[in-house]
Length: 176
View 1 (spheres, rainbow, N blue to C red):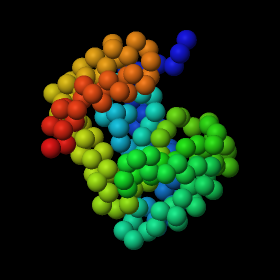
View 2 (tube, rainbow, N blue to C red):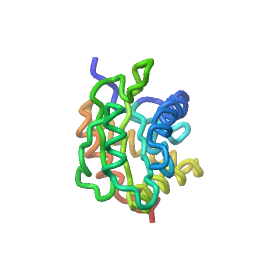
View 3 (tube, rainbow, N blue to C red):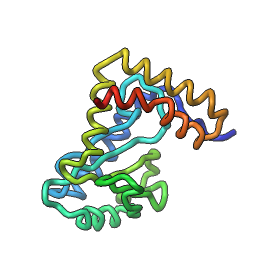
View 4 (cartoon, rainbow, N blue to C red):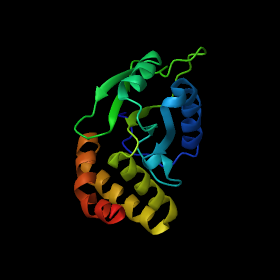
């Protein structure tokens, strides 16, 4: 059976983020101004891809290379901006990344580093916070996701493309 594209909200997601942040924060030390749980897993009650999205916000003036060096020691691999300015992606070498002495298997997660003042970071935080605050927006987003899922017929990339297409106006209104 293929992996589910979207699953019902799991109340464990915030705890999973907290556990990851508890490893990332001390490793990054004074390089990170904040570590943010973003994306649908950060919105209580929202169905989501079962992948925790994490944005590391750099302290003003900290260079990306310094954060990348620390993240590489934890087992992350720099992937560049992937076409999104001021949002740098990192993949994991293995399921036990970030490396710790205990070497647990961590939940699936996407890791991004954003300079202080990044427009993409601001967009992620505004979207998350507005949906957290509004049951109406959460319901509208859930319906959008359900429509994209219906059209995707189990194909992940079709879901992603349909969600972007169907959500164009919604995202603009929420972020406007």
